[in-house]
Amino acid sequence: MAKNWIRRYLPDAHKIRDHKHLRLFGTLLHDPNLWHLNRRSVAGAFAIGLFMAFVPMPFQMIPAAALAIFWRVNLPIAVALVWITNPVTMTPISYFCYRLGAWVLDTPVQAVEFQVSWEWITTEFIRVWKPFVLGSLLVGAICAAAGYFGMLALWRWHVIREWERRRLRRMRSKT
Image (cartoon, helix red, strand yellow):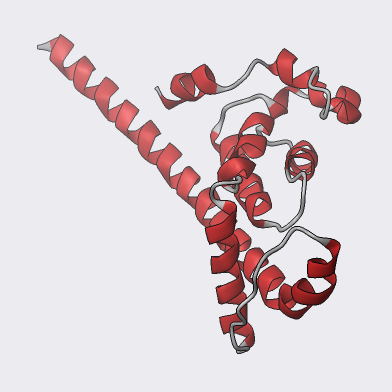
């Protein structure tokens, strides 16, 4: 079953509660709904994790955890999905978000050379921040909606398939 497969890869709730960066949430992490694997909890976690993955900010896991706690959805899945944007995928995803934002705002795409410096942020980033942020929020919202409804559909499909298998097993055992 899918729940068992997911549960195999999720970390233990006690390990997450004791994680140094999540201690700031204190006893809020003791809510059992944050650890349940059900249709609503997993779909909500997908929406939160996918949206926060595209929000252009550092330490995305902390707001993802806060939103998961607020909405009482599966915390480990919401936090893990944030890692879709990682050091390897960050550049192409950021470029796509920038291009999308520039297209929506109908502004020309500007060639920008990235440098990690305060000077770059105050000169170059100021020119491209609006399309970049808009594109990131749009991609995040679209991915969150697709993840939410896709997970609901996948969960429903899986349940129906299991019911059908049980029905067929019962029919075979009667003959």
